[in-house]
Image 1 (cartoon, rainbow, N blue to C red):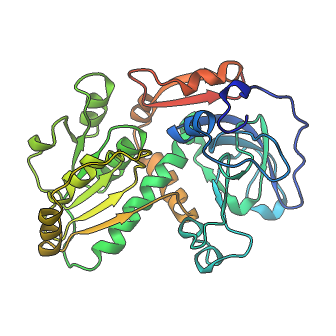
Image 2: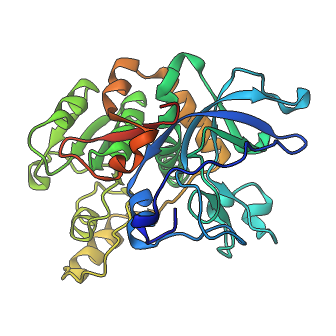
Length: 342
């Protein structure tokens, strides 16, 4: 496909890839679909690989290893997820240290997004250092690893910032009950926290998914009965972002993971928010993408979760033959995946 030209989205026959020395050859099983994919197709976000006029889409992957060099640490039959981001060619200090999710100069590349073909293929290759083994017992649920890695990083930021105070968080508010929000809530419950999830919908599957985690669902911020120690913001809704800043407990931590994707201007009570943040020692941090440690944490969290609950996150499975249908969001969708085998 060509970014920004949905009329050119198609299925193409390409030569089977040949793994370079040391690489894994993988049979693609599923890819997950997120808002970024739709923005690439419809809005022109992303960049095709150099020397190409189009790109293979999708960055959320799940595959099965077909070929693995003996020294790779992987074996034929392993279920794997490919990492999205790659360090820049003249590595900045974070990239040189393996923290490409903190790239300082912005010259990173990303599978299916920025200058690299994605995982939306029945065969793909990947260097072992950019592959993550997932529990084969998860089956197709391993496709949730990449979105889970994003919120695993967010929780990692909470841990690092929280170390400034000799007091562990007790309550968390997750804003948004899409895939990121629900997976953030899952990790919060696994940590034994009092988890509250805010979303605007009043019915459908989301409230039940939250309740079945042992968390509390809200559709009105004013009705949330706690001042949370932690906020994981997953909507990117600008008015909501600023609304939660003045509502945390003392020493609160707010992690922003949602992209607004808009230039809409809003009015905010800047002075009141500033005073509340200063007087309460509030920290706000943005968090994007994920590093290898976050992928591994995500894989652990999914392995420890109730597979029946995870299965309910995947609301539609679209065959490859009609993959563009996955880009149109249905009313009760949570996570949509494309089956690359059909």
